[in-house]
Length: 224
Image (cartoon, rainbow, N blue to C red; front, top):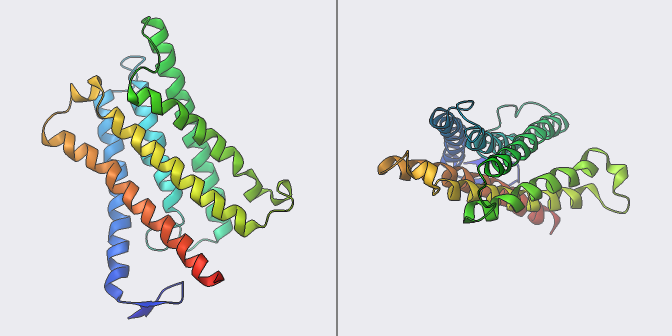
């Protein structure tokens, strides 16, 4: 038995499982991003930049930005919370940049080929997802510059940011999954390879959801 940061006692094996899950998540998001990069061959066409940038944004950068705060799998867990926040902010800025560029690429590509915009479920969800990512990142400014949020406690801002961030991440995961159903991806990846590919964002989303909800519930217990 050991005491975790929430002051509760739990079997040591739980800590090992969470550490293993976090390590696996790091590996999965990297392998999945590399796989899509090899598949899309960015630079081979204008369209090729869209799957590459979107996967880099949502599957790698956003996942790693959240895992920075994992008590079991953060690659910089020995650094201060303030430093983690700064690195998180940098990764999120890169995430937003890639998402906006990915959206611009597919929009311009469809314009060049005279194709209708946002007609699939992937496109229909992808547009608001990118908009939400931009808004979510912009709304995080008061966490860095608390003077911008007069009348709001830092603890409350962090709770709202964590909740909205989780929703944003799940929207991104859903958009990626719908992208795996596109004609481009299903024409290149079939059979068990497709199911393994679809399992990657599902696995990372489950680990991220567990991390965020556990942190939120722990804070609620401490305040009750």
